[in-house]
Image (tube, rainbow over all chains, first blue to last red; front, top):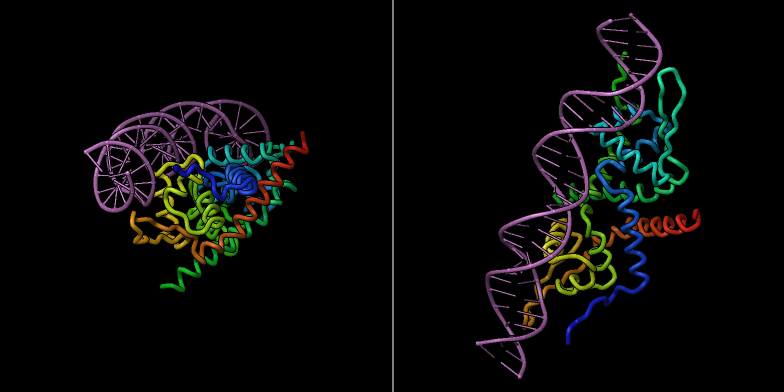
Amino acid sequence: MKKKAVINNTPVCQVRMQAISDTMSILSGKWKFHILGTLIEGEKLGFMDLLREIDGIGSKMLSKELQDLESNHLVSRTVMDTKPITVNYAITKYGVTLSPIINELAKWGIAYRKSLHGSK
Amino acid sequence: MKKKAVINNTPVCQVRMQAISDTMSILSGKWKFHILGTLIEGEKLGFMDLLREIDGIGSKMLSKELQDLESNHLVSRTVMDTKPITVNYAITKYGVTLSPIINELAKWGIAYRKSLHGSK
DNA sequence: GAAAGTACTTTCCAAAAGGAAACTACCCCT
DNA sequence: AGGGGTAGTTTCCTTTTGGAAAGTACTTTC
């Protein structure tokens, strides 16, 4: 008799797995968390500000990632009609709902560093 | 006067950012969360079990991801001396500490689906 | 009118990630 | 000795990701 599949994959598990995939696909890429984290700290930053704040990122990636985040309503983009045209990027109310995730990731990462230290 | 950098990037922020990068690099790749999630549900699964449980994964990826997870002590691998040799994979005590992250990701993803539904 | 600042986009390329299929190797059963 | 199960590894290929550098366009300041 051949084992056919799915033992633990109940509907509940499937939904959870799908949900995790959704979240991760929205937050995928090397820079999403850096951008979100920076925007959560310093509200309302311009493109060049972000370029300076986020060490190592290039303008192509910053532009692309901001578009991704904007299309998912996590970040807002407002063109100001100042003398030299400026653009304000900010986290949205919805973007702030990611805070628990970001906090858990940071907490775990900090504990991870400590555990490496302790085990040596 | 040229703007030089780092407005909000205080030491605290730097540490948080680093921690998030650490966590994400450990959990990187398409399959890590699927594997961890499956192992958290059904404890002690064999290689072929995982291959069947995780829809779409191939043996190469499964093998590689399991090695990654094992080297970070999130998953244990035990060779059983049964008649046809079998191997037990299980989450470690340490791996279970990822639960809060996984739960937050799932929670957010479920809410995200609902918000898509509601806005239409 | 040249330099410098705003905000990007485009091109070109290298590296990383991931998948399909085949292959190894060993054991059990009939 | 052939079929089926265990646990992987290897090869070859395509897709995705990301980076460096240069270019666009428009404005203010010296």
